[in-house]
Image (cartoon, rainbow over the protein chains, first blue to last red):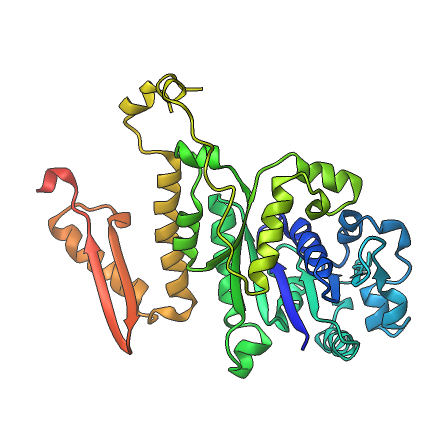
Length: 270
Length: 85
């Protein structure tokens, strides 16, 4: 069975593409056959994060408009056997994506035996974001522990429960998961940042992952290597844990507490 | 956290963020179809009545509709200003 996962957030710049890339790699590394699709028409970026930007010949819109086959447009990852990328088009035509076209592509991926289709949603609540979530079975809502991001993601939760195929068909809810990014245990400890528990309580979602703030994320995007593949990074471990949880394993949360300080450090700051 | 933090008066900013979000998100969820559509009007009228007696801040009036086991509970709370008590 093919599972469709949308990675969404409402707000821009919170880490949707980084998350889409890393979760897809993580799933593929466990032998799953994965297609990751960039829904940000006009602002293609997943290809850069995946490091395959020079291999894009055909894109998502070309497939939908029948200008090439799906096979021609799927870019096979050079690191992982079972991972494929479908790039967004750079067209400025907003109506290039159609619900019917997206459904056809998903049907074909299903027929090809893909285990997961990961949809990297654009920011906002316009057509691209709507189509990215419309067919989803599950949603990973990417949130920064910050007021505007939390509020926007609640808007997205509203859309997930009303403007999706599942919601319209009364076919059970889209399963929603919270993934916190740019988390700083140190700032949480001194009350400068909302904690995992705070955000979880406000949004009422189960936590699928907490990714710490780290310089490794920028380094990974500079290199075009999804950060989950950097084995030395806590960010990679955090995404690995999230992949485990998506696959139904129970894994305790890591990287949410500040390392304990000694007595003197606590009394005199630092 | 150093010694000075023990004497800090203002609540940590994360706490403020959480409270603000709790309120605004509840309101926005109600608007999305959770709560009946007479709530905003009722809120305004109640506020006018209360203000005949006590000068409360509009933000001090909270109305929530909660659903539990098929029952709807209308929760209404007003925070009175210090002087009025």
